[in-house]
Length: 225
Image (tube, rainbow, N blue to C red; front, side, top):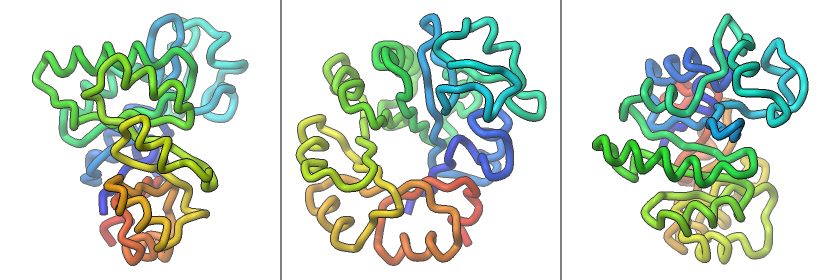
């Protein structure tokens, strides 16, 4: 079962910061997951639309300038990072799951991944995911080699058909809806079954019993307990 550090290791350090990602790397995660928005054609690593929960800023992230965002404290003096900074820090020490949060992120993410491929990275070093399946389709249309996963909440009746249509490798679902039958259905269709966000030791053990392929965890060291 893969251990995917959720927004780095956000149980220990400020989420989606380089400090959080560095912590996840020390905990030997298989992958880290981060979220991106497009702000003035820069891929900003951030989760919420509103800035107030995790920074000393205010307002909607997409209404603010890139320069303003870079002045904010994202926790413990950390700057909101760019996706380039995250990739350079990780440097292929684990995989990077890029979740597309905002609109118009697909093209920039494709361009960035292709730039890293030219530097010797592999397509398998990245997984692009989103609740926004239209944005994922843009990724696949632009570069079929990029590996994608669909994120779902609840169990849409046609989620396996969506995954097949988008040529996804993974279905990423909430731990609130996981059953042995659902995991088997996903895996029988040759998709990976990934589950978010699994933090309690008893839930982590249950995911192992259900034979899921990977979990997103705020406390990555608990995956290895």
